[in-house]
Length: 129
Image 1 (cartoon, one colour):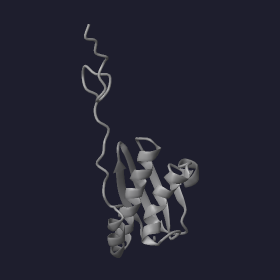
Image 2 (image 1 turned 135 degrees about the vertical axis):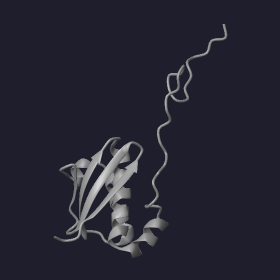
Image 3 (image 1 turned 45 degrees about the vertical axis):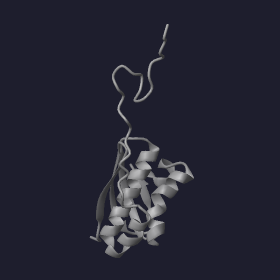
Image 4 (image 1 turned 120 degrees about the vertical axis):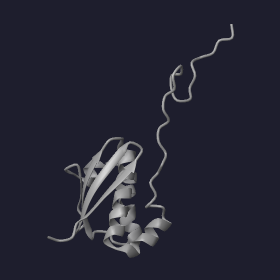
């Protein structure tokens, strides 16, 4: 069996587990074609960014299992997982990926709703009289 690189990426509440093998550039997300799953060009570019930075476009087949969050979070999670898998495949790719900030886990999360308020920061209307 050819080598297989397994990595995990997270963003917001989304988690992406990927399996990357040398191949022709086929990307499958949750059993669907990558273009069908991430419909907008912006999301597709987000996922493909690590390949372009590492200059290895169409050299790997990627099988993604994405769960939780929305399309943006999932695309970000896949991007991190792909970048991690690429460094696993070739340690020399670490420097260019790190320079682009693709190996950094985005720590921003949704702020929790507070008691006595309708949302995290919004307050109920205040009436003086």
